[in-house]
Length: 279
Image (cartoon, rainbow, N blue to C red):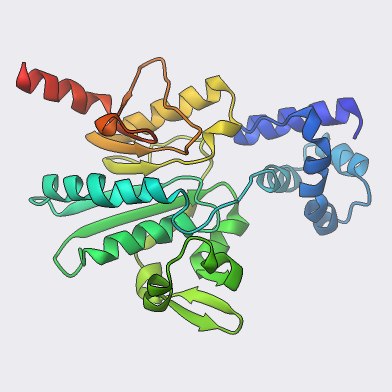
């Protein structure tokens, strides 16, 4: 790829998705765009970028979506899910026992494994049967990957990654050589195409936000902007769950670690309120 073509492509992807493309990853990037070349009938990267320069919206959107990683697995980073199950979720259920309402967002959910992992943990508590209203929202920038997540169909290899046999038997049905999530679990999740650079106005009063392994692809300015918007969507005692290499540093210092642990953070408003109550 010519340097000026790469520069144009990097600016387009950054503007549309916030992702920062590095020049030393040019071969990887060209590999990611192979499906776009085939889909739109281009033989070379130069031809594709020439068309992008003419402002073809459908092509630009496809290129931006192709750059997203879409890598996930069930119960990815097991220690984080264990901490959420054993500490965070019981505390939330206790604090919400009067309203009996829980709102959770899985941002950048890829093919849906994270969202369905959360759904399985919630299903263990039989919340719906107990009269709870549970809103489990899952979003990703890629409309294609969201459609796949909604279908809930995974290969044998995918269900082997992080999924215990007991959960596979309880929540999946074999479909040929693949496995499909049971309909009752699929109904628990509301999937939607959403770009983290867009307005969060439709999201509010969230109890938990899972935003894992996506901020690391943003520059600091974009990362801070996304985290500040996340903070605005959370209720005062809301919780943010990040990836193992990510930290919630923002100008507003909106988050503090839960019980001194990494990866899981509470809205700083809650910390201030606790100090005021004990001071």
